[in-house]
Length: 299
Image (cartoon, rainbow, N blue to C red; front, top):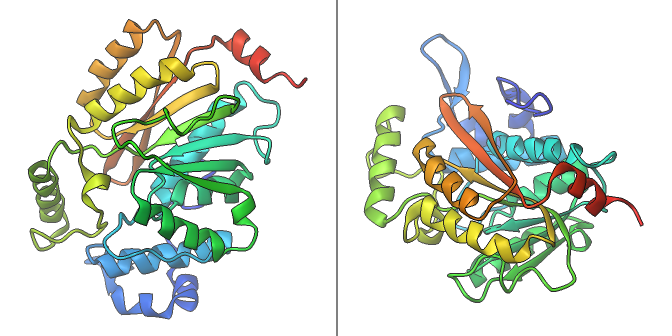
């Protein structure tokens, strides 16, 4: 994990049980006799997230039923690697002067919450589902001061990404996204079955939950990110760094090919790992290092 990630190999379960007593009901002993949790249970994952966000960031967090329940350490890793990208061009890469756009913030609003808590960034979070926007707004209202740091916008046209969200005179230091990576409901179900077999769970259980728009879309992650790349061309002067998670290694080749088609001068892949799970960030900018320095130079 990233060296600044607060989670480095184990949870302080005793402290988390004090914060969220119901979490203790999902504790178990591993074959080696170590205290752990039943990570295959959706309730356990949700309670763990509540406890972690309270313990690490003093945030009150609640998730609406059936919405995607994110693993906090992995999401924090993305935030820290994004901060490293910003540090390439900014002497100070924390504070409210840094503006970030989260594409598909979801009901959990996790990236804006973590990015604001860790670095003080100001966020715009977008989502195409009105119920997700409502749930995220309730989270912000439950935490003092966040409504002035995180604003939410509904994407009214589900096939668009930046268009309709980034306004004409706005500038973002970075965008981030955790795109739906399955191409269909059948693909999502098959992926769930494989994961559950590894965890020893029931075949159709879904420990991280998630509604259909959070899990799959036409074309899967390659289709979604390809649309993101194509739209980014039109917003290249308003964004310093475009970034997205890429779940599948084989997705990178066609995406990098598309970026090269648009003669994007800076393309980076950043590998991340949480336990047995591997993922990567795809990062691109339409500006060379010298151009980026000039773009963010204080007036």
